[in-house]
Amino acid sequence: MTTTTSPRTPARRRSGPRQLRAEKGTVPFSIVNYLIFALLAFICGYPFYYLIVNSISSNEMSALGQIRFLPQGMHLSNYAQVFDLQGLPRAAVVSVARTVIGTVATVLASAYLGFMFTQDRLWKRQFWYRAVIITMYFNAGLIPIFIIIKSLGLTNSFWVYILPMVVQPFNIILVKTFVESMPHELQEAAEMDGASILQTFFRVYLPNMTPILATIAIFSAVAQWNSFQDTLIYITDQSLYTLQFLLYMYINQADSLAQAAQQAGGNLGTIAGAATSQTATSIRTTVAVVVVLPILFIYPLFQRYFVKGIMLGAVKG
Image (cartoon, rainbow, N blue to C red):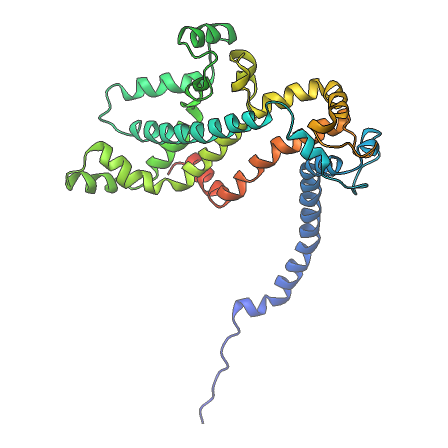
């Protein structure tokens, strides 16, 4: 008579109650995590929500600080009147142009320099790389930089927004580390097929740099869009003012602009009573929303590449 032995119970089944207790123990931790992140999200998002709500609420109530969470006396006349402010459409064109051109130039320059600094055949590679990186920590200062910009004829020029920001050492470090993490056999195979160094860069490496280039594009676009100090320092031609600089001016001149809007009559549309009459607060909030909203759409477009690009560009090996 043969006896059969029952199969051994897998370890994972025997430890089921223990795993269940461990999973139950993680529930409070998860709840705390969600609450903390929800609080942080609220802290980060509320200022934008506050601007939007106050820009579409009764201007009289907004000026008195009575709008906190829910809009009251909703209207859109603030935007219709703000868009008629002098110089705003032209400034929008300048801001969009500098953001697009500056971002493309910075991405291409960072990609090319980051790739070239990985080439052992580059003459004095370490010297040039260190010469670029040291500018992250030391610079000549505002006055010498202004003298250089002026001597190059870039004052009151659109290119003062582009050329000084093309080469960014931090971006070059990210690209260089990213390229070093890629298989070197890619370049060897391309060179065996007769590709030059430029063909290798544009046809082999550049198409495979999407994550890190998307990350750099976010950094560059946000920096270009938000910059206003270069306009303040180098530009006196009003046709080259940017949206951020106009926002800076409008915030400082909000009271006078509100009075001008109330007295403009037909030029800015009929003012429908105190609820829609422009105030200093309505000027500030509405212009801030107009300036901030466009750049908020940049991150969602590149968000899926952002974390991957940062990780791959920051960790070698």
